[in-house]
Structure formats: C-alpha cells, structure tokens
Image (cartoon, rainbow, N blue to C red):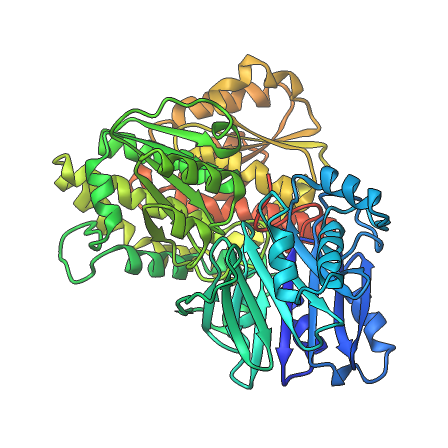
Length: 617
C-alpha cells in the first residue's frame, strides 16, 4: 500500500527521498509528496498522480540539494479522494508527517480536535495524528514524547514518520502494524522506509521494527525506543541477500516481463533453500521447525488472498493426493470473520508474498494466540508474518517489483508441492516421489528453453493477443490442476489489462456461465495431456457450439485439440508427470495477459487502483 521514506544524514535528502519512492512505486499509489528542511523551516511539495509530478515541482526550486533531512510518501487512497490536498506529507503547524495504515478511531479523534478549535484541511485520517503531536509539543513535550503519547490515543494498524520545525534534523518513526524498516547510512545518517528496497542502494544491513517500536534518527545516529515506556530497546540487524541490480529491469520493457523470465532461477533458488542438497534422497526438506509441524499435522488449513490463494488451491491437490491429509483452502478475508472450527491436530499455513497481507496476518496472529500450530510461506525475510507464525518457509524468488505476481506464484506452488511430496514419502510413496523429484529438478531448465526470447512461445502469444484484443470478455476454463490456473489467468488479465475475465472449472460452465458465451467471447481452454483432458475437451465442444472464439493451450502432439481451436498455443513436449504440468502452463497465462496489456497500453507494472502489499483490510 502506501510507501514511506525518511532520511537524515550527509546526503542530499530530497535525492534520497525521491530515489526511495521510486523503489516503492510498485506498491501502487495515486499521489505522492516530499517534505524537507531548508534551514529551520520545512517545505512540502506534493501532487496527485505520479511521482513525476512532484519531481517537476522540485526541479523549479533552488538550493534543495542542501537539505539533509526529510520524509516522503506515496499514497494509496483509503480515507479521502486521491487529490493533492489529501496527499502526504501533512502539515499541522510546525509538525509534518507521513502515515501508512488506518486510524480506526479517527471519527472520535476528529470530533475532539474540532471541539478544541483545530480545523483539518484534508479528508484523511492521517492528518489528525499531526494535531495530537502538535498539541503535546506546544504543551512542552519533546517530539519523541509527543509522538509516543499521541500514538497511545490511536487504534488501528499503522505506521507514521514525523518531523517538527521545533527539532530540526530529527526524524521519528513508529511501527504499530504496517511495516517499517530502518538502517544506518554508511556515509553517516539514518534511513527509514516501509520496506527494505529503498535501503538496498545504501546498505544491506537493516532492522525490521517490531510492533510498538519507535525509532529516532538524528545527528547522533539511530536509537530504538519502546512506544509504551519510552525506554531504550535493542533490535537485531538483518543482512539481506538481495542486490540493488535485482531491482532493475535489466533490459526488459517491464518488470513483469523480467519476472516472468526469472521464474526458472526463482525455482532453483527456492529449491536450494527448501531442500537439504547434501542428501541423495528425493524431497529432503532441510531441517527446520516447519518440518516437524508438517509431520505432526492431522489436517491442514491454508489461508491466503489473491494469487497466493490460487497457489494454495493448487497445493491442495498435491497435499491431498500424496500426503493423504485433509486440506481446506480459505480466503483469509472471509475466514477471519467467521467462527471457524479448528480441530486439534490442524496446522494452519498462511501464504503471502509480502508477509504483510493484513487479512492473512490477522488469521495467523489470532490462531497462534489460541495455541494452533501456524506456518508461514512468504517471500520476504523480516516480514511480520515470518515473525508471527510459529515457523516460516521462505520462497527465494528475490524482489518482485511488478504488482501482478508472477514468479512468486510459481515458487508458492513449488513450496506447497515440496510439502506434499515430503508427506507422500512419510506415507510410503517413495517410488512415486522419486519419479516426481527427478522430473521436478529438470523443470527450471525446460522453462528456460520455453521462455527463450528466440523461441516460439512469445511470438505465438503475441500474435494470439492481437487477434483476441477486441473481444468483449474472456473465459478461462480448466479441470483438475488447471482449475486454479484458470482462476489465476483471469485475475492476471483483470489486474493489468482491465478487461472482463472469469476463471471456471470447465465442468461448471453448464451450470450458468455458458449463458454468457457468444461470438464476442474468448474461451481459453487449458487442456494439457492429463487425467482431465478428455472431459475438458468435451466442455470445449460445448462453448464452440455456441460461437465462442476458442484458444487451445495443450500438448503440441494434441492434433484434435488444435483442430477444434480457433487459436493455438502449444506447450513444450516435456514428458512431465501431469502433476508438474502447472509449471509449464503458468508462463503461458502470464504472457497472454502481459501481451494483451501491452496492446491496450496500460501501466503494466503499476496497475490502477492496486497495491503490491495489501496492508489494510
């Protein structure tokens, strides 16, 4: 969601802020702004729309390179429209702040402030926090004490970074839900941000703040304090293995395209992190707490949102087939507000790319309080989910900048497949798991060849996209392993191309959706040569008879499927076990959405209204 950057030190602060906000654009936003000290006064430049608008304002100002302290923000609108007035930073007298998250009791706070004579000028809940700090500082408190006392009046998951003209050269950050990361600048100074990516240009040694932490950055360096007591606390430094180069496009037109092509490497890195490669066995999960949780589970509940939910649905197929264990897959946003019955022996797995997904995180936190075993699957070291769950398994996909998940989807599936195969071996399926493992470790190489820019896949997808572009809607259908892929394909197309798309289990078409089918609808049939292929083929015939434009995705040797399809994208002839075919179908659905979005001219890496890390409900 919203992005935060704060800096005090020896470098030109505005440059640090703008470069940092660039690194956070992938999170999604609709307005941006920076505030910086010029002498003892704070100046603010902000605008609705993209960060370029703020850079234009800054380019007209003299001497801003002298500023050495400031804060910046990209806003994803929650309270109030995406206007310049509502953009951050907000000023209340001598206090200036940026805020990420939601203040749940903002109505009560606003009423009290208005009664005391304050007049908010924005529609946001964020501005109100500034008035609380202002009152306390005007009553004689220091900035740190005023921030701490003000935060105790606020309910809701949020983070703030604050400055005051009464204490030039000081930046204070508080984390109480929404993530906040801090680091020491090797050249002297302190950098704060809502995630680690803006910091990587300067250092890989970062501190992930805990709930209830306050960080003070000034000329003396960095200090961590308890929000409740104000007493100094110690926080461990984490060294990140991401490189700044990994954050660049490296010649690709978009981050999303780069990340689609990074899937083979992401799978290798994830397998290397998951498995004990010194072992000659198949699926030798490296010794860690997660292994014992899996061994002891009598049933599994997986909670997730969006793309992670689709990966989890795929995992259910493998876990039940090989692990012979009951699995339920739940939308975290629904599950947390039910009264779910969680039996003894249930392991709850939370899957989240960012590790900050508010609904998934809330489920894990609540169930762990009740003594339920919890396991996190996330791509982000130091994330809240990784600290709140009883154990964590990391998907080593590296940074994913494109808002629409691609490589993290693949490695989430891969991780759940490894869980399932490990349990399969525990259930005596050693021979079958040995066969699956021997084929699995070939997939990154196969995918690399399939995705090669000189190969036929990209050309076939691009040509098909041109022919489908003007149709009014898209239906993706599949059975078995291809049902979750159909859901994910429709989501990708909606996310980045802004067209109507639906994913269905192919057998469900006749139960209502087939009424939508006509000559202006594209039906994309995911039908690799698996146990469900014949049934899927029958459903293809049903939609073709009603005039749909059919795109077949299947094995190159499947002449009958190719013959009845208007358009055709062949999968590689791999000889893979059917359970592994999702990994070769996945890049097809991703590239199809990408090419349609390119033709439509949308903002592929930063789709409208979307955020990479959904840190609010």
